[in-house]
Length: 253
Ligand SMILES: [Zn+2]
Image (cartoon, rainbow, N blue to C red; front, side, top):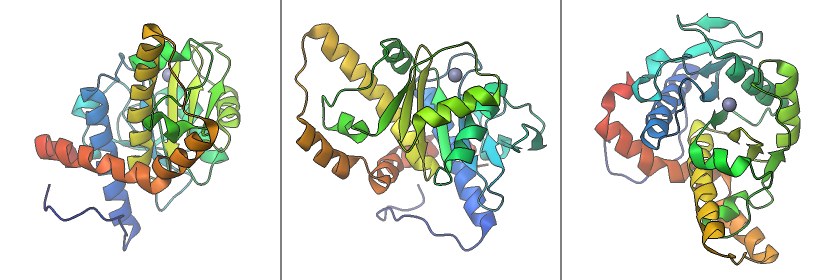
């Protein structure tokens, strides 16, 4: 962390500056996903729409550990699934899902999906999250269930169906598969992912222990407006970013 001033939402004077910022945020998000145990073999991806060429997106190199990714390791992919910058291949599933989400949602600049354990466990229940806690209200009336599973997502038609199920929400539960979150920034998409995984964990524990009390609809809706907005999502990522950069500064390279 270079200074200890309060966080300010970033502004950029050039696409280059915006791109560098975004790629560093992505590398930090991967290091955090690694720390939190979201990796499962070669599964999982986080994308960032290029600030200058909105039809292109940055993504993790297929097969590289989340825990080793530096900003300079990210690869740039076009909407045909071709790598236009970088030497590593792209995960076919990453392309099939994320290209369709970025195409369907011009407001989405970043999307995250992994096979994290609690999200994966929750996804088998075929239901959405209940408003059980203040934090879970970030997803109240703001996430969808993709109520289907037909194997590894390898073609863009399946990605289109996932994007259709996601609709205007910030997240989707992919049945028998895992979680997917989106944001206007990488910070937001990554934070929603981290807190959604924990929200699944909490609901699984609460329901295993007893019969949890839900927050009533009106209060859940109001709490969503307090903790579920874009700025709240962005801000929540900042302390995690500062700490992981402090501990693993090579991610910025
Ligand atoms: Zn997957």
